[in-house]
Image 1 (cartoon, rainbow, N blue to C red):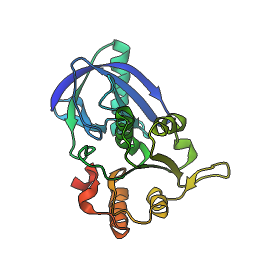
Image 2: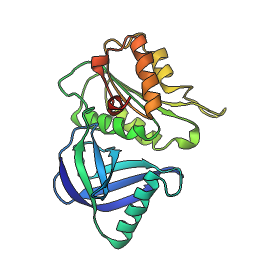
Image 3: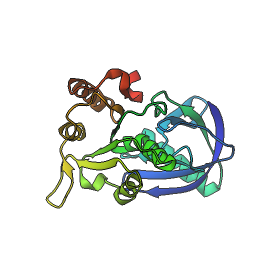
Image 4: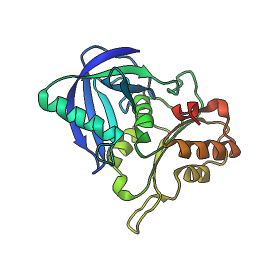
Length: 235
């Protein structure tokens, strides 16, 4: 892990509550797809966020969900806004996490996330597209409603570059205009895949969600030694 100063390239709202942040590190950084960083507010206050960009990118992308004023993530957004206005640097610690993409495996992949946990799997499928993998990949993104969706066309285009990959956004509370899958995201995956025994599975989302998915996926054939999530350290 190293401490690096970054310039704010852009801060863009993806929805009323989710922000896309692009950082340009002053020094070269190395990380694996699926790792995270700490955004350093102070020596005693370091806040983790999944890296949404591929390790092949020159910029580091974060996707930060900030739903409440003066909340933990909104304080980070305000710090970024201030740094951008002043043209000053922010500090990160990178890389962190043990749930990164395992590159020594050729097993089929299931990448599944809820909400802004999407950052975690985005780094992976973008990297896999960059290196031109031929692995079989199933990507599922669970969202509460259609207003929470963002960059669906861009995601579909990236995953469309892979010869054996499929992308399924799943909306839990959909209205009549939604054309995709509905309900709980992990249940949609289990409906599509008869057994998860052959898959490497990468998960991101709220801790309580990941706990339920781990239980249900094991019952559906998944092997614990081939399931990865940073949340597993806490549940």
